[in-house]
Amino acid sequence: MLRLSNWGFLVLTTIQFILGMLGNGFIGWVNGSSWFKSKKISLSDFIITSLAVSRIVLLWILLTDVVLLVFSSRLHDEGIFMQIIDVFWTFTNHLSIWLATCLSVFYCLKVASFSHPMFLWLKWRVSRVVVWMLLSTLLLSCCSAISLIREFKMYSVLSGIDGTGNMTELFRKKEKEYKLIHVLGTLWDLPPLVISLISYFLLILSLGRHMRQMRQNCASSRDPSTEAHRKAIRVILSFLFLFLLYYLSFSVLTSSYFLPATKLTVKIGEVIAILYPAGHSYVLILGNSKLKQMFVAMLRCEPGCLKPGSKGSVYP
Figure 1 (cartoon, rainbow, N blue to C red):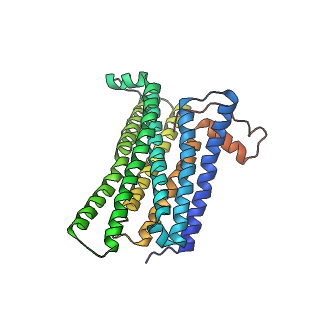
Figure 2: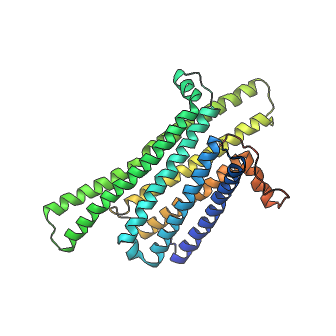
Figure 3: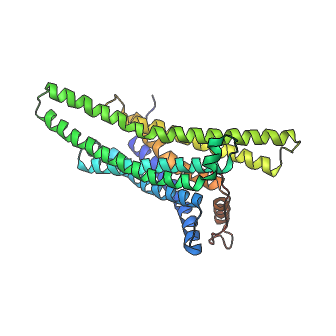
């Protein structure tokens, strides 16, 4: 039977945390330094930097949750401290997911090529569309956190009723209402998931069509343009894999309160939840020419590697 000890779980999540902090910290440092020196930043770099910062906060919250789960499972399941953590986690989680969605829409409108009038209308207004999405992202993240605060108020009422031992009809009604709100809370992540899937599907479709056209024109399979398109498709598929895994783990963790989930299931959900913000940072680094150049130069300890400034590609 598969088992995961508390110490093994803590070591695994700590390694993921360190790798995630290094990856996201590197992105924030490179783009932040360029922004500070040039006093300007591209829209894509701004989204990526904001995404990295939100994930640094998210990783700290997830690590705190792991430590509580290992050393104080009672405090992890109850108490005002855990409620505060959940509110911050909900806000940061939704902010991170929506920022990744904004990035997928930006790449789709910038790179993909379709003749549909609606797509062309959005493509010509890509900056305006993405800016409005960013503002909506902040608003929706605040709304999700506020809804969770209301949910915790209901939870406190339920705990008080349950503590008296009076299992009345009112209690059963309130309990069903609480569980319904808890389930509906997971629906906040459905819109960004659907938008990301549509954006990257269109992007892959456009890149694949372009590659077929190049093959028909007798372009070599090792042509730089063909290799760049293949690399972009691999990066997109890697992100989608991590994103779908994260959504699955998020669904498990948010429903563990009222579903018969074992402690092992919760631990696996936590591991996958940390894998997404940690792993996607390296997908972003390897898919962006500026970040990849700086990252490789830093690993090789090349002179001048601490001077970011070149522009990166528009691929994720």
